Length: 246
Image (cartoon, rainbow, N blue to C red; front, side, top):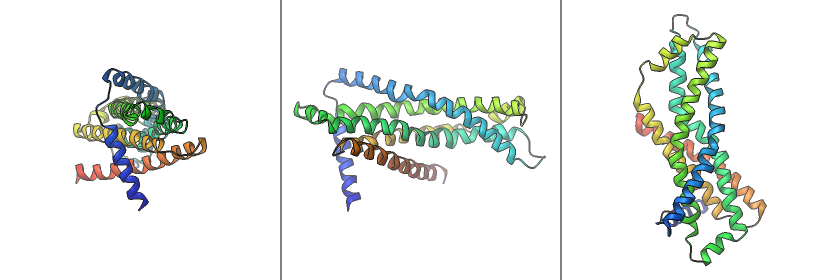
């Protein structure tokens, strides 16, 4: 029964969040701040992780090409499709659920236990919309940008590691990148990025907004939100993949 109660509370909170902001000028200011904090602030870690993963994927694909008759360009092709379809959307979302999600849950949870949210409600401000809506929109808008950045740096990582280690020449790697490219893969992953962006922001916001107690409970809410966000990202990945590729 508790799970249904939690789902109901989450839906009620989202209904409060997606109401028209009381002051649009304040909303736009908060949105830009959240894009800078949650989106732009995540670019560095996305680039670092993606460039290493691109190199590792290139080595993994090359070491699994045991048949000498298989063309070398398959290494670039395998790296490209893995980055586009799964790593730069799903795996990256799991990483961001830890970084961005814990940040959101901790920030809102700290405001709840210090009664700042209660003060907003007393002043007649829709605290849910005021605090959570800019974060959700910032994650939905900027997650596809991080996805593109991850694919680009991952491909660069493969282009560096492949020729340097001698597993594939630059010509074969580039041939693999353009071989039988299917633009639908990008569209598919864009859709996933939008859904994942909503999960990454809304679940931690729910946990932070409803936290009760002190600093210890804020930490527990942050951890629980990351765990549930990760599970929901994988479930959403499963459902979306089944819908688009069945």
